[in-house]
Image (cartoon, rainbow, N blue to C red):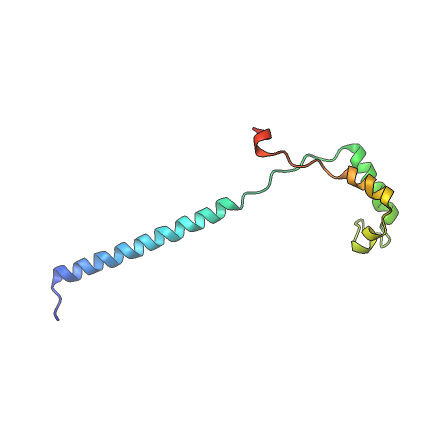
Length: 100
C-alpha cells in the first residue's frame, strides 16, 4: 500500500480543512458565549426620599453596626418597617422595548 504524492497531498489538504473548520467552529462558539453575557441595564438611582428611608431602617435594625442588614437583622424588621423598606427599592428596570 504505497501512497502516491497526489494521494498524500489530498490527505494533507483534507486534514488541514478539517482542522480549519474545527477551529472556526470553536471561535464562533466562544464569540457567542461572550455576547450572551451582556451586562444588565443599570437601575435608576435612588431618590433622596428612598435613600433617607433606607438609612433610617438600617440605622434602626443594624445591631452589629456594619452598615448592612444581615439575615438575622432582616428577620427582626417589623411589618410596618418592611412596607417602608419596600418603598425604598429602586424601580424595576425598564424593558428593552420601553427604552428604545
